[in-house]
Figure 1 (cartoon, one colour):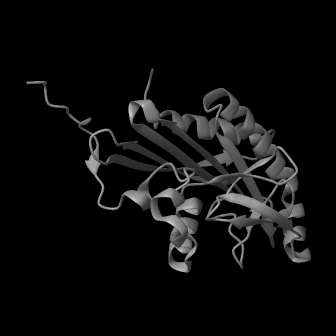
Figure 2 (tube, rainbow, N blue to C red):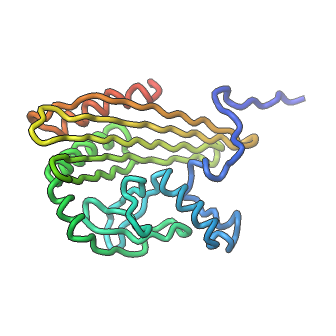
Figure 3 (spheres, rainbow, N blue to C red):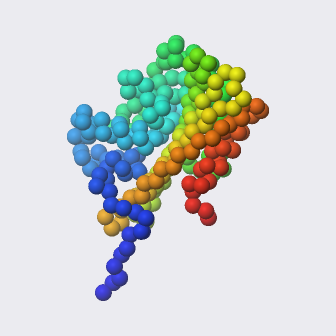
Length: 239
């Protein structure tokens, strides 16, 4: 008799495969048909897209933006921080269908944080090119009163259908800076999901959180990158 197949030991059965599936970019309409457009199912897909950092293309450009909880706006649109605009999203089709202007108040708050946001964004795009070349980086910045907050989100989804596995990496790093401070408070969360579906439906979900301070003297983007690299290295398997 052929030997019995064994699932990788760290994985565990999942009672709810669709919400935890790390491949939200797949056309799940084939699984549920036209009912996907029904409000309750569309709401579920919206939640999956947002929680899994779905990547969309901005119409008419080659720019990619992640849909994240940080970027969610009132009314269901999502923020494009680099383009300083709203993205109109079709969650059922998993794509951006248009853009809309931001309110003057939001534009002013973003503009006040742009110098710090762009420094962090450039450093983190360099970081992802080195460590996660297929990932997408979306960096938000906003200043209200004397507090500036920059949040950098990184997302990547990979799949090997021939080998029956898929993987999803999401990380979110938030730097909070107050006027006159010599350092900022950095907090981070790394989430990793691996889905193995050759012999059933088994998944590994892992989340780690981090916190540290980042010096504000000199290149803040470089200091931000260094802190993230140190913490994320502990979440990746060594070669």
